[in-house]
Length: 182
Image (cartoon, rainbow, N blue to C red; front, side, top):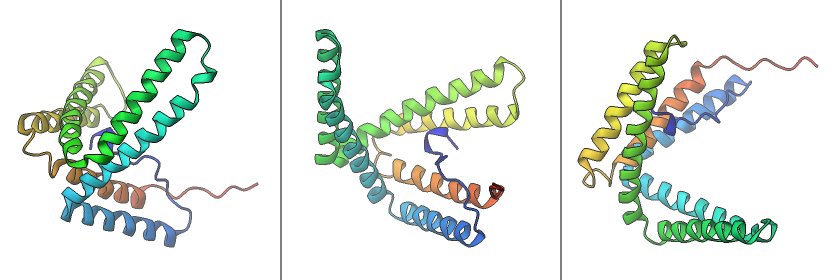
């Protein structure tokens, strides 16, 4: 599964009950996202736009901390771009999802090529898995690019559903954290 969708912040709770409950919620989210990929993609686009708005406001609030005029100009431009892009994603989530699908396709294709390059550079742990990850990621990115824009309505939501499912499986198969002894 491409690294971009891995929910690596999910750690295994020490309680087996909490672990199973969390995995069940992740599987439920995956099922909903798979059943309603358009809704999931739209929700993710709005969430991304909202995060961009917050980032833009943050950049604009930090202008006074920039050292010289040039730094202030660049921080202002950066903040304005984040703010405008975020507002656009929130105001026009369907059109933004179409653009994000193309961006995701290019990102996955480049990531896949980088994974293949990493596998080819020399001996690394799990080289075969890195190679397989690179091939799958590059092919997936290529497919998104080749089928764009027709796949934009379902692609991001479906990929998110798959990522949630893998996160749930990872949670259930990860070793339980050790309790701190002191």
